[in-house]
Length: 88
Image 1 (spheres, helix red, strand yellow):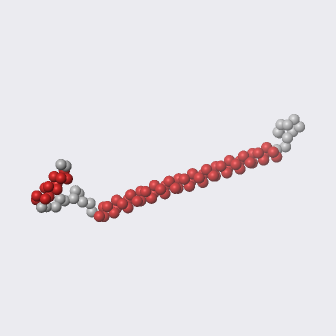
Image 2 (tube, rainbow, N blue to C red):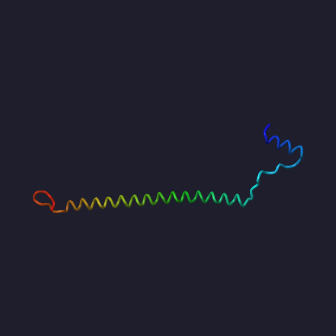
Image 3 (cartoon, rainbow, N blue to C red):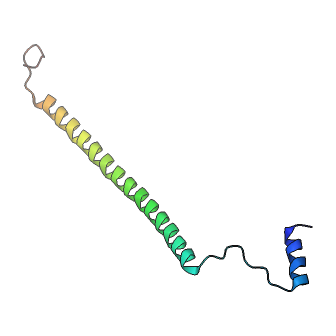
C-alpha cells in the first residue's frame, strides 16, 4: 500500500476531495512557457549567427590569403632578374 492508496481510502471515508498540491495559476504557466520558447529561439538564433559570421570570416580570410598569394607570385614573376639569377 502506497501513499496514494492511503489518500484514496481517506477520501472515500471522509467523502472530501483531495486538494491538488500547490495548484499554479494559468498566467504563471503561460509565462513560463513563453520564457522557455524565447530561450530556445535566442539560443538557436545565436548559433545561426555564430555559424554565419564564422563562414563569412572564413571566406574573407581564405580569399585574402589567395589574393595575397597570387600577388606575391605575380610580384616574383614580374621582378626583373640579373645575369647571375639573383633579383636586385
